[in-house]
Length: 235
Image (cartoon, rainbow, N blue to C red):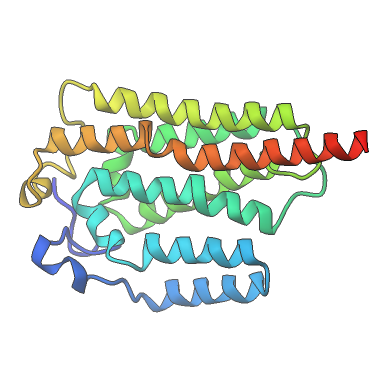
């Protein structure tokens, strides 16, 4: 099973062609432009849109049709970088428990990495955008609870830790899986010097280790806020 010509981001690219594979879909560019207007002078919102441009406009979009490891980078940008920035730009009205949003975001992320669902998403445009919308929506709801300025620091830190742990566990399972799970990536990785299993293992490692860096950054932000609040209370 290989990515079809008509799927979003197009067919899997060859290494020699990758820098020619920018995605200039007018509907996508319009949506991103509207997000820029909505963000206005909000720095976090503007940065979030820039991250989405890397994920959907740059050659990473096409590369993720070839390599599972590139798809993991794409997902990490969405759920651990762009959505927390959006949560800072458009916070909720009041702090809420992150427990239910964490469970929902976890279920969505794991469900889309179930091989039949993943293969469908990369071979069907409607399923592809359903994947993107549900990943973004569930992660945004989660980060709005964790990063809310009124959230108790301990609760926020536990939420950040929970978000990372579920992703790391999924990454570990993919890293140590005895065989390649995704038929959609059965051929294209060979053009990039990977076996399908090696590509999957790299993706699992990215999800397991480097993906923790943004969670560390958001945890540090929550801890810093808590420290500032405590210092103000003692002043």
